[in-house]
Image (cartoon, rainbow, N blue to C red; front, side, top):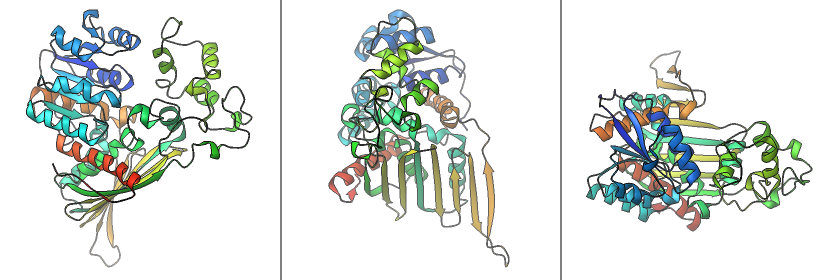
Length: 436
């Protein structure tokens, strides 16, 4: 749990990147008393206007770029940077060079060179950089971490973690969506989606650096040769099996309206002749019949993100970690298993439950079992979004932070695991991880 925030008359935040995550974090920030969003930076006028209206931002504090924000001399205590992956570095460096406290959406950057540039700049200018690894802040993972810190399972010798990405989520974000092509968005799926999980590996082993990594993976399913018989290029135009397909645009975006922040908001952000913030049903049908990505078949796009991947890591103390990513499952879920020298922890995130097992010196029972249920809403990454904002404010104010606070070193190593894992796939070899 986060520590209470010491009262301050007003904590002023500048929002950089007024997309889905940036506006969500800003909304969570307002739950902490005295917090105000005083400026917004986004090159897209639609997003700027929506944010200005939502957070009651003075029009003179709405800017297309970070340089304009700094030139205007707007006063703010902290920055939420929710820009796209390929904009993180160029929008964050000018702020760090001013000694600002920045909360940066994950992944921090696109490659190792940029990663070290962010790290060195943070240190050089005595700035503060916090990465949005929100899973640390969920009651589920923070409770497990506390048990580890308490020494309940001894030293961790093996971490098993996995993430299943639901088919509708995969389609909306990593096939049809803006992360569908790694060249265009700048990030491979391991860093774009499972950067949280790479961070958890280093967090549970905090203080012990990872030394080498290997990985294998592929785009197994979402390609033309795997298209079902009868599949068309556009769901609402020429597909004979649309009504029986879990990826149907009709089902997901018209009937269910899943991930509307990706589909319909994306259309509005491109600029249309429509007035207002919503799209009439007839217009939605029209767009899904057009060449827009959200109406096209998931098997006939230019997506290149892997839908299956595993990562193996060895740490300096000889312990290991194994992570598996599987996309296109019926249900989104995360599993965690920590094998320690004195016991084990097995957890299921969506179930919000973990089990602790320890050896028992008894003739009839060989181990003890404690079942821990976490009673928390799954909204906002299982409660992590609100809690991370609280820690960010404490960090900016110089207050004590929680056990979950993202140290730049841990974030660096989590990113280095991810970047080097992708090198391992491409070069088919074990890769040594750089030492900070």
